[in-house]
Length: 330
Image (tube, rainbow, N blue to C red; front, side, top):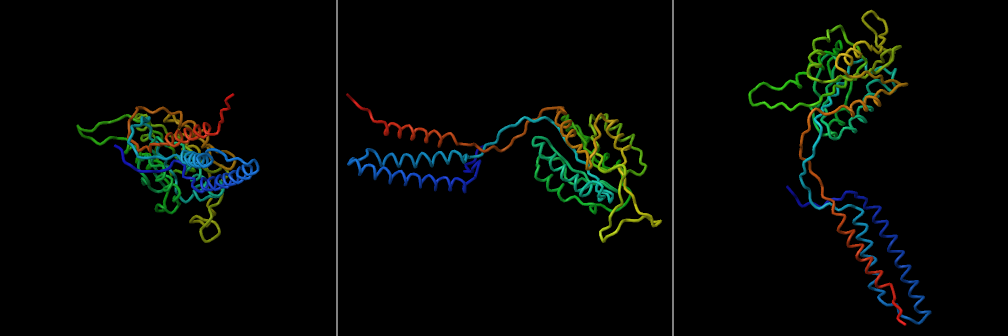
C-alpha cells in the first residue's frame, strides 16, 4: 500500500532559512566584488548570470536534501521478537514515602519512562495495584500511550486497603492464558513481568501463582523501592500518618516477598533508592532476554527521497565547474 504524502524527515525549516539567507548574502557580496574587478580590468565575465543561477539552485537542492523529503508512505513488514513486558506498579499509600527522593512513586515513574523508551519493538502493558489490581494499559506497541499512563500514576488511583502482590500477578496470568476454543491459535511469546514495589504484602500465599507463572515461562523481575530504615508517611494536609493506636506509621522496604518473586521464576531482584539505581542492570537483563518466537507485523514507513535533490545538486555543481574552467589553447 502506498499513499502520496510529502513529509520531512528533519523539519528544521528555521535553520534552513537562516542558511539560505546567509548564502544569498555571500552570493550578493561575490557578485559585487566580481563586478568591481571586471570594471577595473575592463572585461566582461562569461557565464556570470548562468553561474549565479546554478549556484543558487544547487544550494537550494542541497538544503532540500538535508531536510529529507519523504514522498509517500508505504507499509513494510518488520520482523520482531515475540517479547511482552508487563509493568506492575505499586500505587499504595506507602509509595508516597520520601526515603527515596522525591518520593518512591515519583522516582519509579521517572525510571519507568526511561525503561519504556528502550523497547520500541516490543509490546508493553501496565498494571497498577494496591488493595486491588487494575490493567491501566493493555499490551501495546504504542510507547507514547504507555508513557502517558505512567506519567499519571498516583497513590489515590485505587481504593485504600492492605496491599496485595498476588492480585496483579494473577491478573497478568489471566492475560497469558489463551481463551479456550478450537479456533484459537497460540503464538509463543517471551514474557517479562516487572514488579515495582516497596514489598509490603499482607500475608498472602504467593506460591500457587508463582508456580503457575513459572510453568508459562514468564520471568518476574522485582524492583524494591525504598530503604530498610524506612520513613514516616506524610499526610496531604501536613504532618505524618498515624495508625489506629496513634503511633506514627513507619514504612520500610520489605525485600523478602520481592526476592521470592524473582527467585521462583528465574528473574532478578534489584533495588531503587538514593544510592542504587537497579533499573540499569534490569534494563540489560530485559534486553538480553530472547524472544520465544518471531512475528511479522506491518508498519508505515516514510520513503525518504533525499537522493533525488542531492543528485540534481551535484549535477548542477559539476556544470558550474565546467563553466568556470577556462581552457587556454596555444
